[in-house]
Length: 263
Image 1 (cartoon, rainbow, N blue to C red):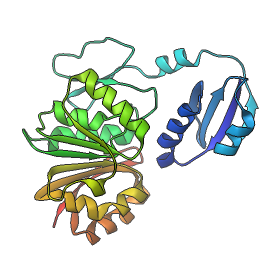
Image 2: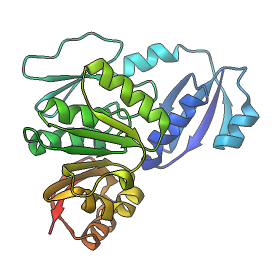
Image 3: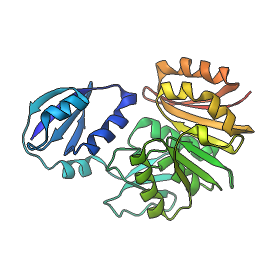
Image 4: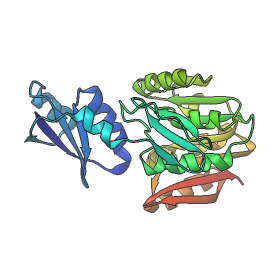
């Protein structure tokens, strides 16, 4: 077995992990600088370095599946949620909403601060029967949470077909009717959303600010996360340029979630 040692930013980490799983990685650990991705000896080292870069390190054989399962345990998030890995059958406490986490492709397990911030914000923002649009849904965890909190129509999309497959599986396992399509916010109808969600990189949040403003109703709300403290000012400038005003900021460690409205 060998490790491919990669440097990456926090915002690029989730997509890089997804690409590594697609390339047949046996296990992944995080480092302060990025990731260590472990592959079996028969994997094509040259091809992996061509695709991902990084340095090759020899390492010992380990049961990475077992270690991944040990790492991701059931967790309480906010006041309402109980996130459970797909390989466990832990029931939710009476006061909690159970969400099954499919972590196999590393989209939105709930372990990341930006996802937790969004889940906590949804507890306050969701109203019965409202229409919610989740842009860049990943595993679908935020769309599922919105539906289980009482939202009416929930629409979720992602430009990555791999993410769509994961989200579809999760929605089916939860028995939820959520409209899911492969595509971007540009394909969403104008003025349709009471609440639009985007847990994306700061660059995408800034670029898509006009579309987030376009798809919400005049009294609608936008929930954005995936950015760190130094990114807030730049994203806020783009929100204001799109006719939006920031009304609330939530934080966990260096990560931030923004709530914005038209105005």
